[in-house]
Length: 516
View 1 (spheres, helix red, strand yellow):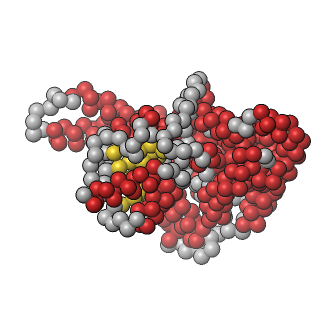
View 2 (cartoon, one colour):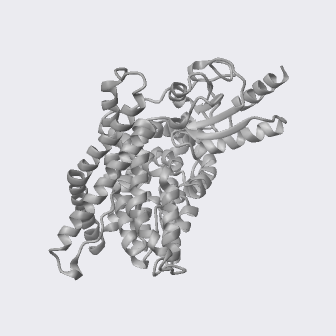
View 3 (cartoon, rainbow, N blue to C red):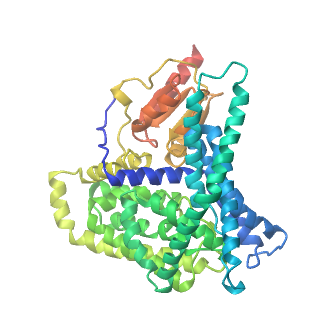
C-alpha cells in the first residue's frame, strides 16, 4: 500500500532567507564539531587551570583555535560551494585574514598600555565569509575558460589558476576582511559584555527561544554565539554563550508537560520525543508541541531565562560548543568546577518550563478535548506548520507523525530508477546524522536477520553522495536532490526513517537479486 503525503508549502520572505543562511552556517560548523571537541579536551586537561596542567601540551591549544579551526571551517564552506578546489582556495584566503587580524591587533597594542592590550581575534566569522566567497569566485573564473584550454594543459591551468586566485583572495582577507571582522567582533563583544555586566543576558532568551521554534536559531547560534564563545573560551577556558541556545532543559520540560497533561496524539508522542530531544540532542522534535499552542513559547522563554540566570549566578559555562544539544554533549563540554551550575541550570529550566506549560495545558484541557472531538488532527497540523517554518520536511518530525512510507511521485514499487545489483545502501539527509543514522540501523538489523551478506548500509549527507551508491533512501522531500547527485542509483522515498514498510520491500528486493 502506498500513500502520498501533501507537499509542504515553502514560506517566502525574509524568514526563509534567514533560515537558509543559518542552515548554510550550520553546514560549515557541524562537520567540524569533532575538531571543536578535540580542542575542548586539550583545554580541559592541559591549560593552567585544567585537570592535569601541562605547559608543553598546552602549547597546542592556541594554534589549534587560532589557525586550524578557522581554516577547517573555511575549507568546509568552500567545499560546499565548489568541492575540494573551492575548499583549498577558501583555506588560503582565510589564512590571509588571520595574518591581517594579527597585524592589526599588534599595531593597536603598540599604542596601548600593557595592562589594557587587546587579545587575539579568531577568524571564525572571517572563515565563514571567505571560504564560500573564495570558492564561488573561483567557480566563476573557471567557467570563463572552461572548454578553451588546449589538451594537455588542463592540469597546469587548473593548478596555477587556483594558486593565483588563492593569493589574490588571501590579500583580500588580509586587508578589508580582517578589518571588517575585527570591527564586527569588537562590537559584538562589547554588546555581550554589556549584557553580562548589567545582568541582562537572560533577556536573550526572549529572542532565542521563539527563534528556535521558527528555525531561525542557526543564524544566531553559528553566526554570533559560537564565534564569540570560542573567543571567550580561548581566553578564559570556557564561555556561558555556548549554553544560551544548546540547553536541552526548556525543550524537555515542555515535552514532559505534554506527557502528563497533553491529550491525543501529542500526549502519545511526547515521551519518545523527550528521549530524542534530551539524549539525542534533536531539539526540533519539540517545536510542533509549541506551535500547537503558541502561548507555550512563554514557558520556553521562562525556562531559558531561568537556565541563563542560574549559569550567571553560579558560574556555569562550557569549554566548547555542545552539538548536538544533548545533555550528554553538554556534560562532556562542561568546564571544570562548573558541573553543579550547568546541571542545575538544565534541571531548573526544565522545571520552570514544565510548571508553566502544565498550567497552560490544564487550563485549556476542556476546550482542547472539545476541539479534538471535532478533529484529532491538531498535532499533525502543528507538525506540518513546523515543517513549513523550517522550509522543508524533516526526518525527526516525520518520526513524530508516524505516517506510512511514501514513494516520491506516488510510485508503487520500493524504488525507482534503473535496476542494478544492490551492494551499497545509503540513508541520506541534509546533515547525514541524526534520524538517518537511526534509519540505517533499522535496515541494517533487518538485513542481518534476513541472513543477507555483502551489503553495506551507511548514512551520509546528500552533498556527499557519489556514484558508488547502489540504493539511496531519503525522506520524500529530499529525493529529487539525492537523485540529482546519483542519477544512476535506485531511489527509495519514505516519510518515516524509523518505521517504514519500504524497508521490508528493500530486503525482499535484495533477496530476490541474490537468489537469481
